[in-house]
Image (tube, rainbow, N blue to C red; front, top):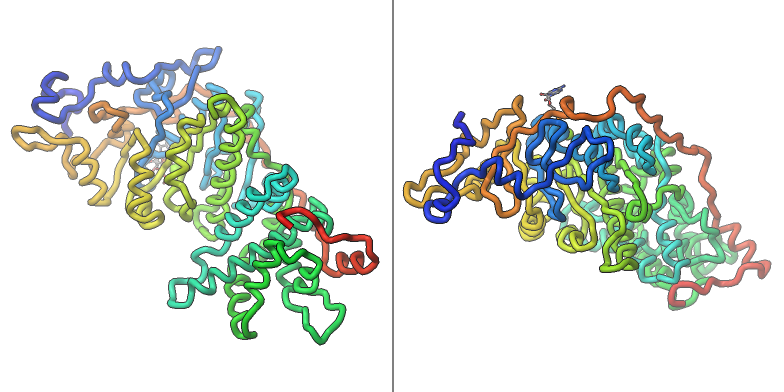
Length: 505
Ligand SMILES: Nc1ncnc2c1ncn2[C@@H]1O[C@H](COP(=O)(O)OP(=O)(O)OP(=O)(O)O)[C@@H](O)[C@H]1O
Ligand SMILES: [Mg+2]
């Protein structure tokens, strides 16, 4: 292995001859040194570039980072874990995806002891989680007088649940579109129906009741108790009414196909009683991340990917809520920095508008650290153009190891070559032999020359050790409060319930 610090050329010669490695001193100049042993804490967090576990040079600018390494390459031990600890010492907020629950177990107690609000959305074991109810977020937006936001949250929810679930056949786009319209309609029926559905009944349990009772309306039967009977109480202009009529029109055969496209993916959620409880209770408030020291762990099963779509939805809705909050502050910046530390990012279903989100985040005091196994996954999820934008918006890249040839070539190209001899600064073969035991990482930081870092392992960091693991929250597993169509219609018959007057009626 070559000695990466024995460069061939001086800084002046770089422009003349092309590529060279950055020196330690150069990296020190463009990063900020923090001391984790300093009891006073550290001023800012950031990507570690030089680290012995106590003295750490971090990029504390507003630059996003991309950390690339195949499984077992120490992405967690050299980056995710130390960065979370540095965020805690800096008093910054964090949203962290945690595929194994390892980050929670290592860091949650220390966060709590540092006065943090600790929130957990645990999709791996929903009975050990705080509650999070996406539909309640929509109702809350409506209550704030923002019906567009309410509709947009419902649309995001419906798309996350059903997009890509029908397969790729010729007619699938139609079934997908119709089933999404059905879900939007049912969800909006609850969200809009402020006088029919009390706030705490706007949830997945009520949604399930509505979809189970979709089509009982029969013009020959008076007094039915289906969704289509209830929708008669909604004004003609109601968006839910329009969506539900789209979904329910057509022949019986068409309708049953739509219902299958809707139900198959939704049943996967409904099968887990504790998951429905968790997604039906409103406990986690995303805006606290931007206001006070808060850490939100998104614990997800790493072996089963069916629930990953919920993680993507959480990230999207959380980000949007933070942007709304930033809008209310000077220079549209959050008063508290929020870091999205997203492990397994490219295993998550594509987050709509991610490329735009990452572009807009910097000026709002939001930083993204994306951890991925390779670029192929990123392109296959986001498409070449969006993947390109996402990569391009990450000013810092850390590369550990990979067997993906196009990625190896891309990094080797980015590192450059000697203008005279054509010799590459680092070859594809050398890139695969970075020394894992020594924490060797190739880093492309801002406009600096490529740098080979030797980063401390998490075991070498100065941080609280042997704290007992923070107990997971205990989810209330009682059936969530619901409202049935029959109850509503019975009250409406007695004249006690008036049609609601909320979203653009
Ligand atoms: N106490 C330790 N000290 C140093 N290295 C360790 C220690 N324990 C495990 N390792 C090494 O770290 C590797 C795992 O590191 P880490 O969990 O950070 O990888 P990763 O890239 O995050 O993997 P994944 O993609 O599975 O999340 C193991 O393969 C092992 O070689
Ligand atoms: Mg890991």
